[in-house]
Image: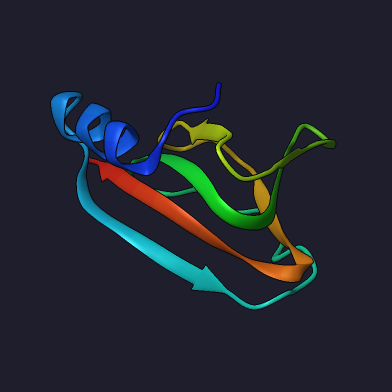
Length: 91
């Protein structure tokens, strides 16, 4: 789903997400299986951001959104051009 960053941030706030920020990531290979003690929703602003669950990678590009549920095993990879991602956490 493509949306702009301002609308996405408003959605995050309305749904109870906190710690909303835009992070810049350098290119890097997958960081290994892990889980969080919070849910994450994000929108790629620039670059590519890949989330892999159950050995199924999905690459997100600018304007595309993703979600990772609390406790869900996954890993992330940052594309060769790096990435900027707007994220929010829900505890």
